[in-house]
Image (cartoon, rainbow, N blue to C red; front, side, top):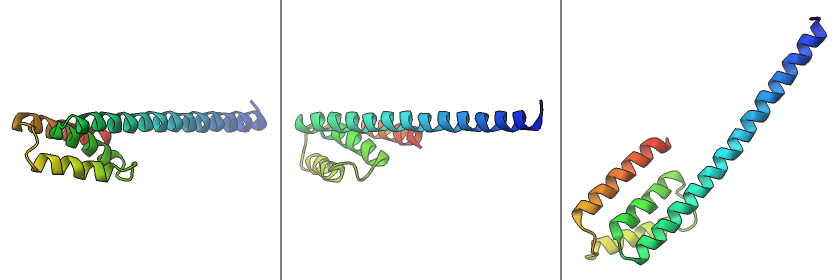
Length: 109
């Protein structure tokens, strides 16, 4: 191969790599946005059902991913408040929720 063909091949290879990388980033971002929306929706359900430990876990995971997502801080405070004021969350459920949160944060990083 002459130098022109080698250079052209190298440029095309780099462009293909960059396009693949950019597409991968887009797919990752879409998955992350869906994951955040799912966590928020699950948190809302558990909050409405006064399942405080589960709500803490859902909104805690969401906050670990994106602390500025919608009103996650307010929702987290509401779950904490419900849990502190004698919500019906039992200790075993709270411990499981904390463990799930720890696993999630470890995997998310």
